[in-house]
Length: 328
Image 1 (cartoon, rainbow, N blue to C red):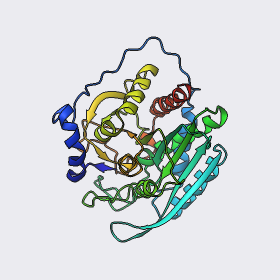
Image 2 (cartoon, rainbow, N blue to C red):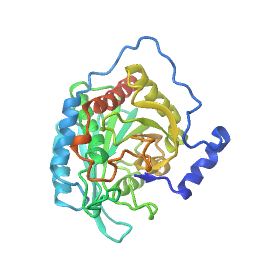
Image 3 (tube, rainbow, N blue to C red):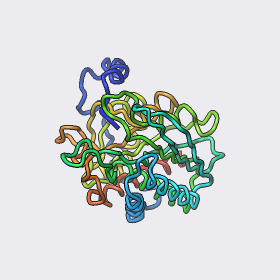
């Protein structure tokens, strides 16, 4: 993902200014509601299992698109998801990147209750970055991508396992996007190739989901997740519901009631092209010069930063939102 560029930001901001002024990083206007004692609907999210799924991905090495570790990890994910999902689809394509490299991308889609009309889209990217541009050494070497990539996938694979054991009445589609993290800031549209392709070539004709949730960098200790501008503009009711759910479950120390500027991430293209209202749950660090955690796009993004408590907070919140949707 990257910070939002001026061109993209202006198109979204022009609608937002009338309601919120020129604030980029501030407290949103809509308040979290203090709830009565809350009865959890979802089964317990197994953070140990989610941690294993993160660790397993990292064990293959850097999952850079076109590489051997990338193929090996993709094969493992497909095999694993086939144990849980009703159907697994591999969406393969060859595209040309910003530097004219031919990329053999592979989006992986796991369907649960495929005949249900009410559907929830859950997504993350599964590739890792081919260079450590934010590091001070070995900038040209690929990173492990434990948090940026593997953490979101790990949470979703554990959700898949849970849905197998305790199905819901609604449909759930888990989409793992390829080639999210190949881009460079100076090239617009050079990130998120997998979601750009999927959004323009949906895995099923006329596919629709009621809403979507993207997970990106959701595994580091003491992570803070805030309201991101594109999510506000495209899917504020979803954002409000997810944050309220986190609050009800006792995770308000992770899900902060704070607004920040937009990010070009997979959800941007899902909203823009596929027209599915989708939010981004992504780690925000106000103390960092980048706005992201200090290990972002460095070789420090390894298993040492992954924390089971954060995986639990995110996984339980998303799982609860799914079971709430099935109950409504």
